[in-house]
Image 1 (cartoon, rainbow, N blue to C red):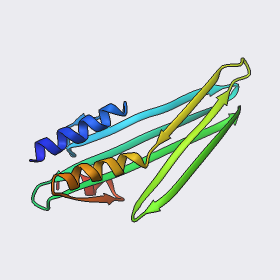
Image 2 (image 1 turned 90 degrees about the vertical axis):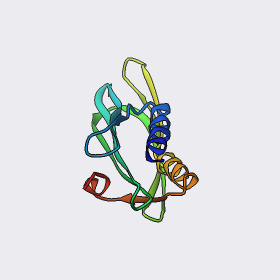
Image 3 (image 1 turned 60 degrees about the vertical axis):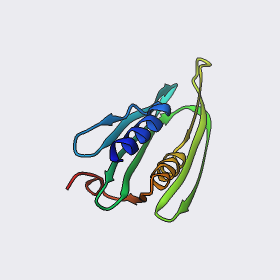
Image 4 (image 1 turned 120 degrees about the vertical axis):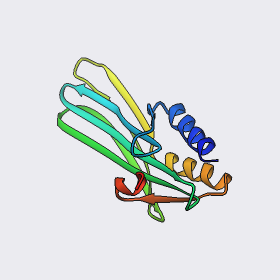
Length: 142
């Protein structure tokens, strides 16, 4: 059962181009730089990390997530962000457009809230509970 759940979550993360990795201290980990844009005299970076642990003894899927955004300098563009809290899970959507002084346009659109929602659906479909944790260690083999 665990292997099937891990494989389904892995396929989900892979379909979102997040480059998941199986094994290690968690069943699945992600460490992806989603945006690294240098525009004009500014830059913007967005990095997403997560760790997934499927615990058969507790029949629970644990998810740790971290999103890091860095902006510096000056660039032309527009961005928007919407978020809401669902229990301990922050449903967040980040999108925007950056325009460099040379006319190059970069559009980005990341729906971070879809990741925990989809993993929760996989867990519940397989009779497992789902829990978002705030420490990476809570989503690692003890």
